Amino acid sequence: MKTKIIQVDPASFEEEVLAEPAELIRNGKLVAFPTETVYGLGANALDPSACDRIFDAKGRPHDNPLIVHVYRPDDCRDFAYCEEYPVFEKIASRFMPGPITVIMRKKSLIPDTVTVGLDTVALRCPVHPVARALIRLSGVPIAAPSANRSGRPSPTSAQHVWEDMNGRIPCIIDGGNCSVGVESTVVALKEDGIHLLRPGAVTPEMLEELGERVILSKAVLSAVTPDQKVESPGMKYRHYAPKAPCTMVEGTDEDVLSFFAKKKKEGCGILCFEEDLASIGKSDFVLTFGKKNDKEGQAYALFDALRRFDRLELPHIYARKTDETSIGLAVTNRLLRACAFDVIRV
Ligand code: AMP
Ligand code: MG
Image (tube, rainbow, N blue to C red; front, side):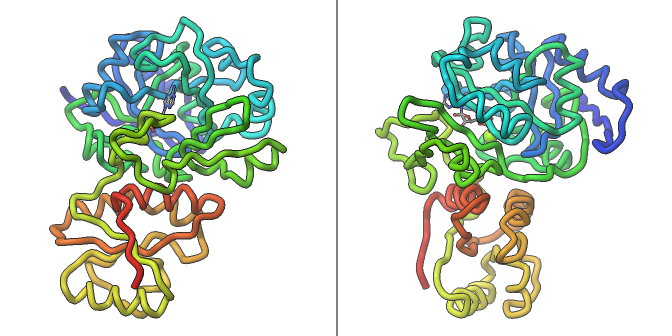
């Protein structure tokens, strides 16, 4: 299959450029599109065979459900029993459209292919103008996981999508780099509070401001064993895995940097903060992901750095430990998964 790329400037575009991809979605085909978090691989969420194509193109396990993207926050009501969740109203008015996904009891309109037979559906209303225009012009909700091959880092540019999906899908909309860089915050609404299943740009601190109890799922910062019951099927998988084994390194700046300098000499990959370069020195194997105190910058750069490492032949990668507050929690969660939860103290 030939993969067409359509360039769109999110800051200023004619909707006409999206007519063809919207038509593809309506006809049961796949379109990769930019969102504020990462690129999505979209299909008509109401068409089971279109959604099946997502699993095929990604090589996604068939027990991992898809997020359904809607045009307006209120459209969630068509697909889930939102009225059963008083806190939904607060979340929707404060954070939607935006980088948050809410899991609620599904209505029958949503096919089992999307939810892999669960009685809940994950709903998100993106804020990215291209994503929103595509959903509106398609006239259907769009089921979309991240547009990477399963097990690869999520794509934050059209180039990343091309690397994974060229020849597998008919169309990629290139809207430049994703501004957030990590996937949406995923929450499940339960009697005892808001369960945070996946951290993202809507942070635990922001959710707490709603005056609700926020319960961090154990799987956010620790590994899930194969026999453990998980709240979200995606937690089971070793996501974001670079080709070389990866270890997160804890310790004082001084100790970590001297450890990195030693590992650099051994030919290992180093993932560090920008200011660390002064001490470690530049090399093709030393990649940075933002400044030490710029957690947004780290989120923005992380997946691109992980993909760069994959183009190199490395025996091992050592990464800086990241802060766990605000969006740093999302960065730490993704990096820990890339490291298969391997952390050492030096
Ligand atoms: P992705 O779209 O690849 O970023 O992943 C979507 C995430 O949402 C995965 O971790 C899924 O397991 C999770 N998810 C989607 N639908 C549900 C659901 N109904 N219940 C629990 N988790 C869900
Ligand atoms: Mg994904």
